[in-house]
Length: 307
Image 1 (tube, rainbow, N blue to C red):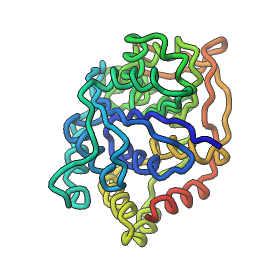
Image 2: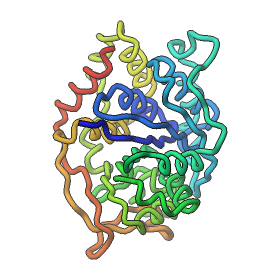
Image 3: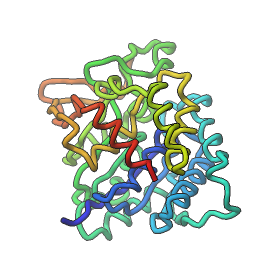
């Protein structure tokens, strides 16, 4: 059976780097590149950290591209500074040079070229906002037919959002960050015919990063990937932190862990609900992850990082 082609687009949060690391362990997929979108990060350290992770894993065959898009509602600086911390972790800085290539073109141009040259339709794994994807489609509408599906960590369907800032600004608390950063781009993708598999807060809220999990991965720290994952999760353990992006990523290799449900939805682009993914009869059909085998998921990622 041939491997599924996957192009990843992440936005430089702590769990984005861990998703890169998980994706590269999957025998079921063939990564064709990684795009970094400047949302939940500062872009230079985020690109650098991504390339260093690929170096650590010996994946110099996977190019990295820097997107130049901009969103509407920026992530807090406190979130974004994690990109500097991860880029400076000792395990990622044992070498004086970075071997994994950074392409010279923008992330959105690289996405266009990668999709156009792919021998078959490609799965887009998006763990940040959809802005780079929307920009790529605007640049080259023909690539829509080259996208097999978008697996996206984003949205909150039947639970509250996670954007405290929207509440402070008079919002209703329904927005999720990856939608809120650029709801116009999310709506742009909703207006396409591309199949969407959504990993929303509805499912991620049930899969927290716990002290027990961090201790379990600490017992594997003789393995470089577990050591790196443990250091990253130690950074975020004081927060309410969940397996957002990693949960979405694991779906590519272990879809049997997940139960999907179809919803008809719209993206709210303005007003007090800006950034909401709203369930509306007659809206755009999507598939959303509704349940997950939590213990199976935990065991899977622990095993994958045992190397």
